[in-house]
Image (cartoon, rainbow, N blue to C red):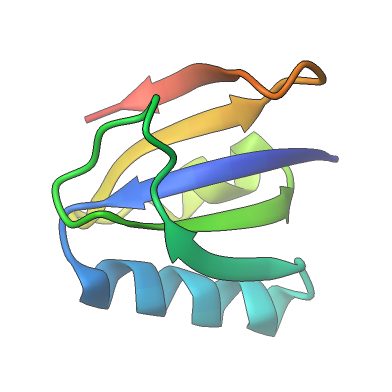
Length: 80
């Protein structure tokens, strides 16, 4: 399990993703997108879980998925 940031094309997409995290038991928070990552709507979900699970939840609203590295930087895993 790792820490990730998921960005979205709309606020609605972020809210739906957060709800899905909550339902699956993955800790998650909605927050502004970090400046080093760009996003269409400016809202992201920071969550602890697995990248594979988030990719399985892929929807038209998911813009990108980035892993939070130990040094605080990000590694983009998937981008639409």
